[in-house]
Image (cartoon, rainbow, N blue to C red; front, side, top):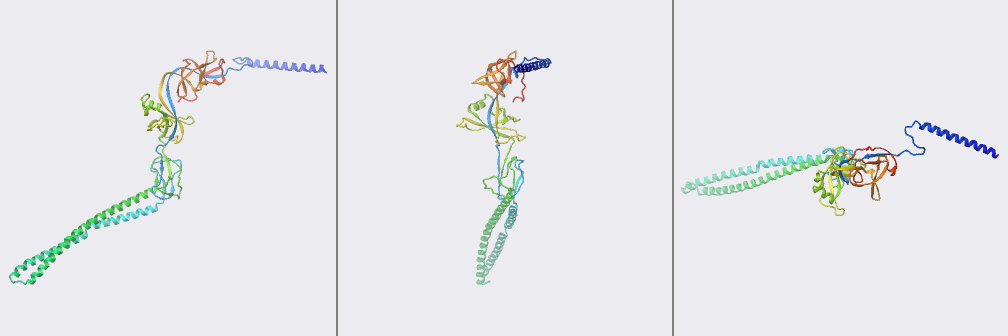
Length: 435
C-alpha cells in the first residue's frame, strides 16, 4: 500500500514538473516577441509626468473671498390702492423699464378722471363769466345815468335862480330844483361807491374763478396720474422675482410688502474685504491706483467670469472688529450668468516678477512645514529636494530656493514614487490653460 502511494506521489510530482516546464517555455516564447525584457517578478517603472524648469516673467495675484450683489435692486410697489386684475410677467424673466407688470381695477380712476374733467369745465365757465364783469358794467351805467341827472338838476337851479330874483319864476320852483340837485348829487355819490365796490368784487370773483380753474386742473392731473399709476410698470430693466400679490389681491401704497422685486444683472456688483495694509498698498501708488487694478472673478467650482471688472468704490471706514475695509467692484454680465448672492473669489494682479522659477502647486509637498519636490536625475531616478516657495502666480508657486533652470520636476505621479526609484517619465501637459 505504501508502494502504491509512493508511485502515485511520484507520478503527481512528475506531472506538476512537466506543467511548470511547459508554462516557462510558453512564457519565454511569448516574451521573445517583446521589445523590452522585464526580469521575472519585477514590476515595471511607475509612470510620472514632469516639467523642465525654466525662468519666466510671472504675474503676482492677491485673492479675496467675495460675494455678488445687485447695487440697484428695486422693490416694485403700488402708488394707488386697488385690486389686481391682471398679472403680466413670469417670475425669473428679464423685463425692461416701462414694461407693464400689473393692471389694477381701472374703473374708479376713470370715473374720477371724468368727474375732474367736468369740474374743470365748470370752473372755466365761471371764470369766463367773471371776466366779462357784467355787474361792474351795470354799476357804471347806473353811475352815468345819475351823473346825467345831476347835470340836469344843476342846469335847472342855474336857470331858475335869476328868474326868481326877477320875480319871473316862483320861489317854490327854485326850492324844488335845489332839492332835486341835492338828491342828484347824493345819487351820483351812491353810484360811485357802488361802482368801486362792484369793481373790487368783480376782481375778487375773477381771481377766485381763476383759482378754481387751477384747482380743477390740478385735480384733473391727479386723476390722470392715478389712472396711469393703476397700470404698474417696471421702473428699471432687470430680472424680476415672483409676485407677492396674486390676481384679486389688494394693492396699497402703504403696504409694508412690495409687489415684487427687480434685480439688474448687468453689470453685476461684487463686495470683498481687504486688510488695512493691502488697501494702503493699493492706494499709495506702490502698484497702481485703486480703480486701475485688473480684477477677475472666480465663482464657486472654479469658473472664471470671462469679463474683467474694475474696483468702483471703497467704503469710508475700516471695520474695527475685523480690521478690514470693504471694496466694491463691478463686472460686465451681458449673459446674466452671475446672480446676486453667489460666492467666489476676487483675484487682483498687483505686480509682476521677472525671471522667476515656477512649478505647479500640486508638485510641491509640505510635511511638518518643510516644502519639497521630487526631481529626476539623468538616469530617471527620483530625488527629493527641499524648496522655499514665494508668492503664488495663478496655479503655480514661485520657487525662491532649491531649483535651477533645467531641473526636471515631477508633477503627476509623485504619490506613487519614493526617492531612489527609477521611473518612466513623460512631459507634463496641462489639462486647462493657466488663469
